Image 1 (tube, one colour):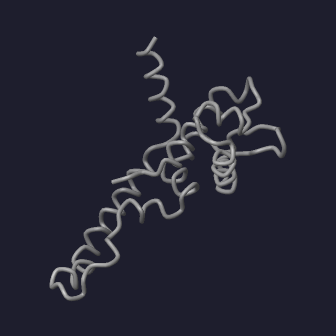
Image 2 (cartoon, one colour):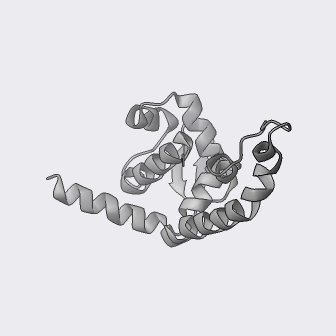
Image 3 (cartoon, one colour):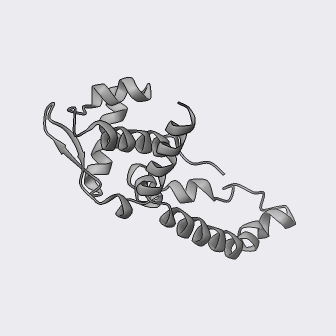
Length: 146
């Protein structure tokens, strides 16, 4: 399975904003340096997070701040904000099986129920992981790397 790079970049940005946003004005240029991504990509991600209610972004070079409580920002909320079809991309059935093949004719219907169950489980798992937990993991890694 594959989780989009946009999701990990968004999490990187959210951690940075949480950790340094009270002391510094966090801009797309600053986040671009931290993530190694183009500022245009960062602005797109910040815009999606703002639209979903995760961030407040001041116009111009005003900076970004968290707009929701850490425990209300889930991995699912982050990923679907920056890539709305993330789950379908993660768990999908190939689109062009041969209609002349006995397996190809049935594979979609064979996998439909199984994949729906898998999607339900993945979504539930992603909703159980909050930015609060991710930040705790970040702080734990900071402690062990010092």
